Image (cartoon, rainbow, N blue to C red; front, side, top):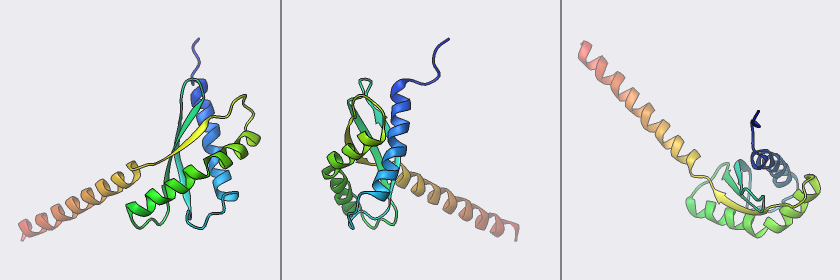
Length: 128
């Protein structure tokens, strides 16, 4: 019977939980604000982890880029704390990437809401 999840998926989930806690409690950079760890993907050999993040209350894409750079500069510090938290032989190198899918999803949701409200207003005009 095949396993339901691959080891890399289980490690990615553990890393995501650990990172969310470490970034919230241990990283004290005022430039960051609130960070959401949306997803983590780990290579098959567990040597590299790509961490997809978004920021709460972001104002501009330039600020998001700066915040990702701050996280990438702190990656070794975060990796050290994560290695103490997780019980795995090798701790993957961390690469932080801004997750655009949340912003794109919000834009699509806004477009759909505008289309629905426009449709309703046009239907109201037709009935009269």
